[in-house]
Amino acid sequence: MTCLIRLSNSSKRWESVAIHMLLPLLLQKPSLKSKNREHVKYLNKRIEWWKHEKLEELISEYEAIQKRLKRSVKTKKQSDQKAFYRLMLQGQVKKALKIVNHASDINGKHDITTDIKKKLKEKHPKAAELKQSTIIDKHETKTERVIFENITQDDIISTTKNSSGSGGPTEVDMDTWRELICSKSYGTHSKMLADEIATLAKRLATDTIPHDYISTLLA
Image 1: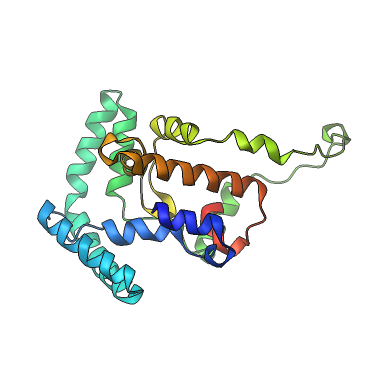
Image 2 (image 1 turned 180 degrees about the horizontal axis):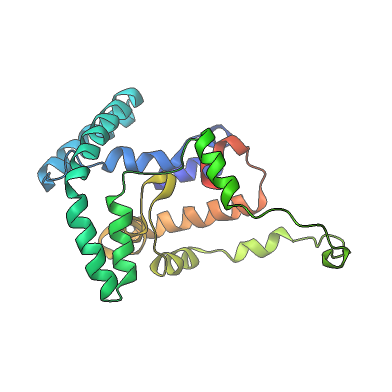
């Protein structure tokens, strides 16, 4: 992961690499009840596929697992609902929301259909007339690029410790990122990853990166 981000940070040629696809492709459990030995076996196989650019095999396996998991998730819904109600009654909202995030088979963003457009329009307030008093007559303030040099490895680590949330388009939630960046198990590798993410954050703030490369992130 660190290597991919470093390549993206240092070379225009690598900017288009979808960094966010690496972790879900490599770390997907083969089944809901799979054991650690199966995880190690499949991780080693997928790393070899990745090294030899066998992306079609990786994606095909990933899609097959996802289809099977969606069928299995349906049988879990009732117990998830009970656990959600119990935690909400106890005031443990954060834990209850984690159940919703992990139990849902909806990941990333929806395809925009006619029905979704209609629902969004219903939720959106009608436009009001423009009031001149609300317009600020002021020139745009220039932001100096140098201020973003304050983003450091330590900032990434402390922010990760205090962040929570589901994975969104990456399907990699904050629990996983916290394990990768804040755990002492990986020694200097965690700090190296945090350092490259800090560099990536500075690039996102100061460089012009083609929209297609980061469209999922911006969505």
